[in-house]
Length: 94
Image (cartoon, rainbow, N blue to C red; front, side):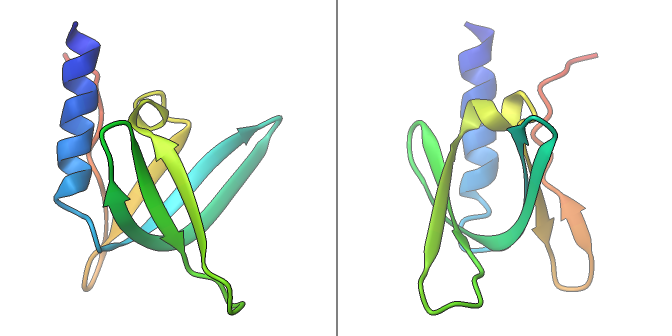
């Protein structure tokens, strides 16, 4: 099961970035693309949770599966101190 190993690798990559600020780009279908900024709050065995930066007083959390990252339905960009860097979660082997 090579896909299981790829999903585990994506989880390990995200585990090292828990608590950091990320930019989330999600394809919601029918040409709807949502871009949000938030904090990678927690990773679980099958999903990860992002706490979104909202201007309202309520806190909003969204969750995605690691397969969403694998299929590029969700793309994550990690904000670093001075620059933006993309979280490398590509599964394509050359």
